[in-house]
Length: 274
Image (cartoon, rainbow, N blue to C red; front, top):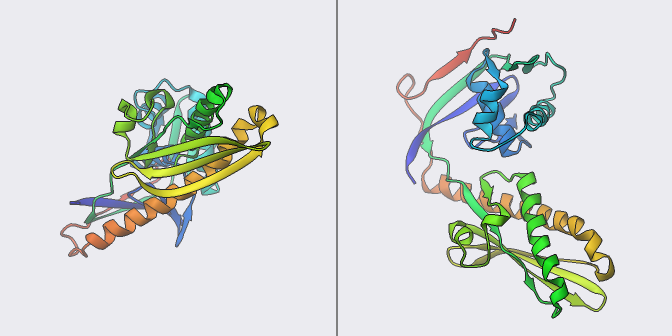
């Protein structure tokens, strides 16, 4: 992996790392990728008004997203920062126009390992191991629900491929994926069991596996909760996988300390809010 100039931005008690992680002191502050992208876009233009249209185009490029998604994203960033109100401590709302980041930011750049590329994850339609074709639709629905739940959780460093673009093993979507979620649904007495596996696509190495049970007579009404439980465990697996990947990258090519004034720069943006 090559080296790149990476930037850490500090503001108030917080730091936004090059990989999108938000930190307060030595602790991570949970901020999903879309919210991290929104915060980064506001920070890049600190002190200046950014229109809603610009933010939608930056955070959701090429997507048909309603303004409500931006409003919810702004609210989530404010909650993460402990901010509140139209004229918050960090983000100011300019009614009918957009938003402004209103605190001083400090940017430090140094040469270090380039951030690893985004991993693409595909949830493959689950195998129907019940022996009953009547469960085939439920197996497909479970895979779709887990894919959607993972997309909502937005694991850092992972892009979840849309279910309709995945198809069966060997399909185009699966061939594009770096990680696969596979599964099998079985009936054990009166219980429905879902087994999921997180697999590395390049060599089919199993990274994690989980099993979930529910009452088969109520499964049709409980697929969403079953999918949410599976997605939460998979999200934790992905965080561990990505953390190990980052550690290995750092060990393979540690960042160098640079001579002052040569490759380290600092940028300060004044608060120009009115």
